[in-house]
Image: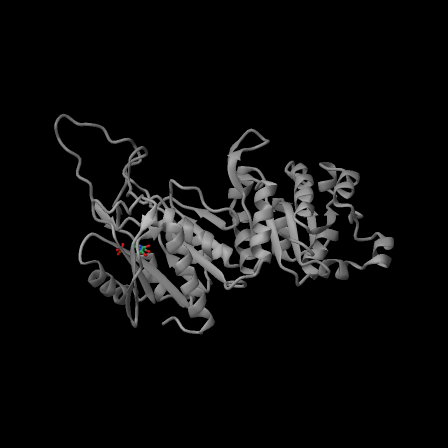
Length: 401
Ligand code: C5P
């Protein structure tokens, strides 16, 4: 619930602006008061009248409106809120925010504020994927701006891909998660999850049985504990949790780039089942059967992301790795902790018959510098909650054990 919270809602100029009317309704139903700000472009998509009718409050639109300045200056307006939400956040608004421009009411409020900001990007797929937008996104994240979405799907412009604004109900969930506080409030947690796919040719790839279930559960638990979560995921079979910053990758090398770009973080949890090897030179054409002779696949070693981050100048205060083993689990995991340079290892037995890899349960042993601890077999959500509790305790004690 958002009872007693005041949210300043900036509505940017995109077709998704119509969803912001539903967002206002849902925020108010959750107990929040909504002060709406409509950009000039936003007013092309929704009318000030419908926005103010739903918000039950005056709409702010113009920086130079002297009445507004007399009633409440823009500096004050930007600070009375508990949270500023930008929905939809267009490519243009994100660019302005990243540059620190202040040439209209919305951008001025965003520059003048010290209130937490959450943006819900919405734009055409190509605009979202453009290096300029991705650069702006990285800058904004570095400035502490939280994001929700965008989602992958059909776009109003007829294209398909990432760019749809997150549904209002899910934006409210993300806002609630952020405003509830919790033991990891103010912390940035980076989680890797899922398998990686390493192409052999345009239609074939090397993969593994990881579903992404454990990493997803950990990201959700970190979010519920109040953290800002960057979730770098390979092609997993379970959907990512709502409310985290999702960065989708396919290969180990893409995962490495995304992880390094997401630093700094307070905690790094490396739950992804990263392929150890890739093709040395994947074919750019589909490989053909050739009269009886078999193809020879030459491998190259993938970067070890966990080991690299553990020794990185921006190393998180606490780095947690996983060890999926089929035999001598604890021994291998202890050696792996040393070799990779991480603080903790969660070791699990993925041998045939355990049903752990790709399943719903996990049985882990936590290995720290001080020793090891067997956790009872439980649902992956329970294992995640336990891990996040341990992490919160370690951070508050100022120790990584
Ligand atoms: O060496 P191994 O694959 O068993 O190590 C498992 C741990 O290392 C996991 O935490 C996994 O996410 C991480 N890892 C990685 N990059 C790799 C291989 C594994 O981050 N290339």
